[in-house]
Structure formats: C-alpha cells, structure tokens
Image (cartoon, rainbow, N blue to C red):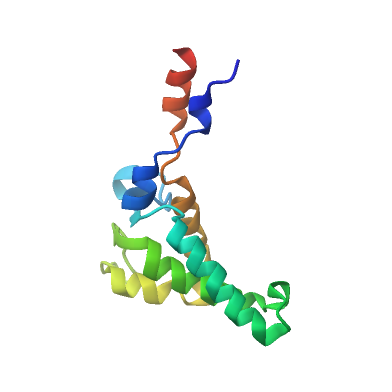
Length: 139
C-alpha cells in the first residue's frame, strides 16, 4: 500500500526557502548551494500575469511567445522572487561569485545550464528526500 507521506510537501519550506545543492561537483563539500523558495503561489501568479501581458503582443496566444522572450521572463521572475542567495560558486578565475553577479550570469545564454539546475533546485524545495520517503514507507 502506498503511503500518503510520499505525496506531501513541506509548505513552510516552499514559502520560507532552504539551501539546495546544485550538483555541479561530485563532492558535496566542493559544490555550490542556492538558497531559494519553492514555487510559491505569488511566483505562479506573477508568472501568469507577466506571460498574459506579453502574450498580448502575440495575438493573446502565450504559445506564440518566442522562446528567448519566455526564458527572459522566467529568469527575471526566478531571480527576483525565488532565488535568495548563492554560496560555493566561483568564476573561471577562481573568484567567488556573489548573488548579484550570479543573477547577472544566469541571464547569459552560456549559463542556461546553470539556470536549469537552479529551476530543478526550486522544484525540490519542500519535497521529501528519498531517505525520508523510505523511512515513512517502513512505518
């Protein structure tokens, strides 16, 4: 029988945020971590409003919004509403990347994979870890 716990999220973490490993490195001690909220209602509402407004330029059809425009909307909203801080990230010269620079970098096409990792981190906020699911299933 399936446990309902496997379908439960921690709403407090979604709304208050948490540090999430980005998995850029194999070694967790050398990896980067993003402090982020989860997909909050405020974020989803802001995204719907922004997409609706931009869609007016494309005959009201959101599916006609060019990918680059949609990506810019996503990056802007994630970086202003959900992403809160970064740690453990350094640039090509080995210099630490602060949060402001991180937000600038993820806007660049070369760093789309980094942004995608951050989106995955957001999706993981509030979700039970596999170990916790296994423990809950045994109980």
